[in-house]
Amino acid sequence: MNTFAILLGLAILLGLAVAIAGCVSQPSEPPSDLPAAAAPAQTNPNSDQPRTVTDLSQISSSRDVQAPMPQLNSPDSSAAGSAHISNVEVQQNVERLFVSKVNQLRYREGHADAPGDTTLLNEKARKFSEFSYQLLNQTMTAARSIEPDRLAGRKLPVDIAPMVLTAVMDSQGRLTEISIDSHSGDRQVDQIIIDSCKQGLWSRNPPQQALGTDGMYRLRIRGYIRAYSIDFKGRYKYQTTLALGVL
Image 1: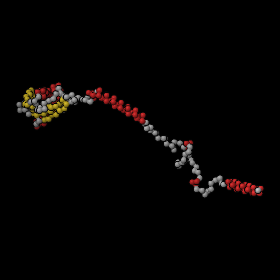
Image 2: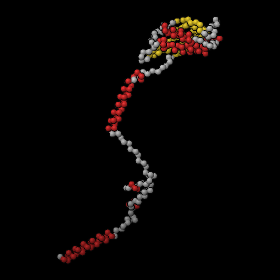
Image 3: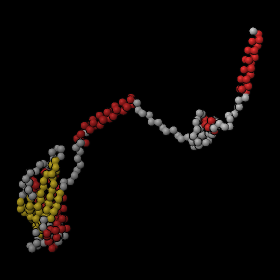
Image 4: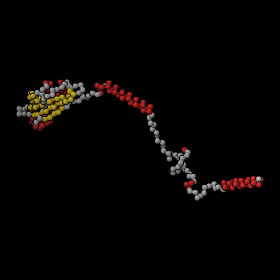
């Protein structure tokens, strides 16, 4: 038994010696025939090559690092709810303001001149168009200034007709006579056209070639006034048409 124990101890010691010798004989550097990829890569902080960063201190200056993109905070449900309530309140305030000023805002109307149209009736009037349009424009201006007070926004007859009259001016361009050839069907309209002719038919330097055989200027005037629009208060506006012929 002693001999067997001694041999067993020697065998164990021999095995331990062989194991220790194997560990001591391992090389500290990897063998040269290993692929280069097996060796750990040496990182250069200033290199432009992609690399794995394990420490923020390895990040270089701002040349390699871009400023972080700002993050937009999405509104939470409470913020959205308050914004919705705010919009509702604003809309209610706008509606209250509009209703309180409805007569000033919804139907606010500015001043606009009544529309008018002028035309020439015959060739002689077109031959002396400067003289003819001067008389027409002066008469139209007078009619527009008279209409608002005389008609007062009232409705005119649907079947109103043009009024036709003949006016006579002397050789100095002064109105001397007006005669009615046909009525319009409305007494106020007739009077407006007559009074407009009284104010507008004059000329300081009438063309002598336009004189009639009796040495007078004879003019045919056709005037027409009709209602063309109505506002929300029921007041009418009017369109005036004047035509002139030199006889």
